[in-house]
Image (cartoon, rainbow, N blue to C red):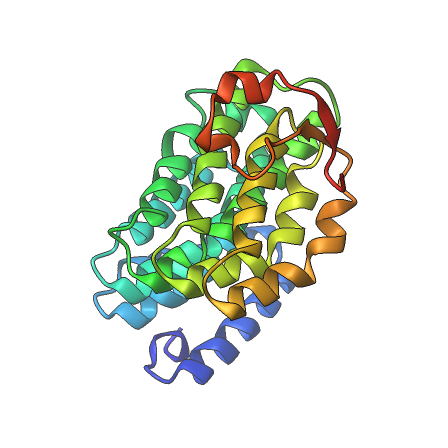
Length: 274
C-alpha cells in the first residue's frame, strides 16, 4: 500500500502490477476484507499519487465485486476519481474509463445500458466531460479509445439481438464524440483518432447507421493539414475499406455537410471501398 502512494511513476506501476497479481490469488473473503478495503483507502487519500493508483486498480478489480453494495461503492469511488481536482488523476481515470464501462456491463449485463443504468446515468456523462474542449489534451487523447470500448459493448449486445431504443440513443450520443476528435484543435488528438481508426471501425461496423458519420469523418483525417495525421490515417485505409457497411454516396467534390443532409442520406448506397 505504501509503494502505491510514492511519487516515482515506475515504482507505482510495478506496485500496481504486483497488487493485481496478489489480488488474483486471494480467496474471496480476503479479497473483500483486505484488498477492497485497501482500494477504498487509496481512493480517499489526500496525496494524489495514491488516487492515481486507486483508479487503475479499481477498474481492474471491479469484475470481482459480486456484492451489489460493493459494486455501487466502488463505482462511486471511480466516479469521484474521474471528477478529481488534480488533472493527472483525471487523465488516468480517462485512460481506464473504457475498461470500467466494459467491466460494469460484464457484471450487470444489458440492464447496465438502461436509461437509469450506471452506464447511461453515470459513466456516459463522465465520458462527455472528458471529451469536452475544456479538458487538457492529455485527457482528450483518451476519447478515441473510450469510444472503441463503448462500441465494443454495443456490438456485443447487437450480436444477440436488435439494439433497444435506449441503446440506440446511447449510440447516437457516442458517435458525435468520435467525430469531434477529427476536428479537435490538437493535432495529437487527431493523430490518435487516425492511428486508432481501424479499432473504431471494428467496434462500430454492423451498428445501425454508424458508418454514415464515421466514413466522412475518416475522409477528413486523410485530408488533415498535419502530415503526421494524414500518414496515420493512410495506414488504416485498407482496413477501413474492408468494412461491411454500405453508406450513402457522397456528392462529387463536396462533403455531405455542404449540401442537403436528407438528400444525401436517401441517396444510393455503395460499399465503403467504392
